Amino acid sequence: MLAYLWVALGGALGSVSRFWLNGLISEKIGATFPWGTLAVNVTGSFIIGIIGALAVSEGRMDSQSRMFATQFLMIGVCGGYTTFSSFSLQTLNLLREREWLYAGGNMILSVVLCMVAVWLGWLLGATFNSMKGN
Image (cartoon, rainbow, N blue to C red; front, side):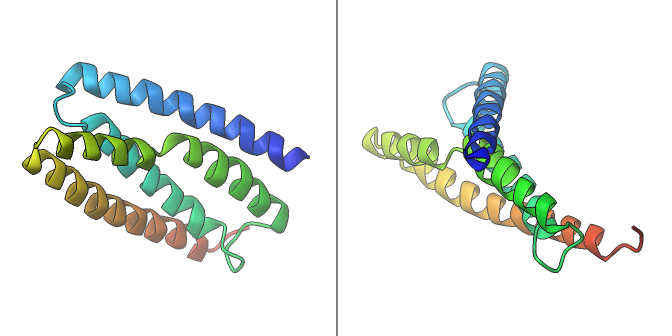
């Protein structure tokens, strides 16, 4: 039952963070192109990459920390924070509005930048795992 509580609390934090960052970026840059959603997906991919690397069984985390990182941070916070469902709906709306360039740009940028971000996050987490220490 505690696992559900961690996931729920993390999801709430992630959702509120997504709402805040998306709103901030949309207010500063504009909402014609979904820059806020793109930023959330890229940063979320980077964060989940770090945590994913740190939480592997051969990493530095003990099993209890790994369980917390997986439940609270990866499933909860990152699951509530990342917005691929929003990405999909916004891209569909751009396609329905015949905004082919924006729709294509959103798809390509989202996939490529998120893959690069998760890879960089993984490298950072793996580097931390390989450091000597307690």
